[in-house]
Image (cartoon, rainbow, N blue to C red):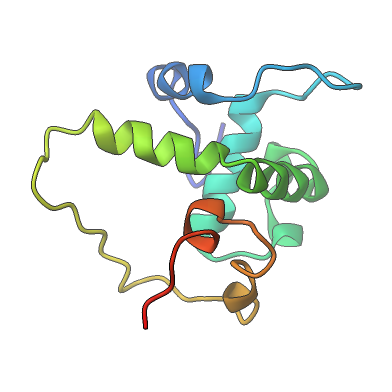
Amino acid sequence: MSDHHFWLSEAQFARLQPLLPNKPRGVPRVDDRRVISGIVHVIRGGLMWRDAPAVYGPPKTLYNRFVRWSRIGVFDRIFATLAGESAATDTVTIDATHLKAHRTAASLRKKGLFPAVSDGPRAA
């Protein structure tokens, strides 16, 4: 595994594994650790899905898993659990000054990809 690719460690994946869906549907899922690592790599780098390195598997698999799990709230559950386990009790901030939003980012809430945000009340 190359140095310039992101890979979840065994310990990191062990923390996430209980939070992942475990109901088999049809074709068995490919390696969850590889796919989640690929999703993180694409999002961290601001890449388009088709530009994901081949070591993570087909870009279509990464995209489909991201969309499906976003719609059913898997990532919301992961973030909430990890934030709840944090030692920080007052305020937690995320520095996103280096992130660049893709032109389609504004439509993600409309498509229901972030249910916790999409279903909540909107600011006046």
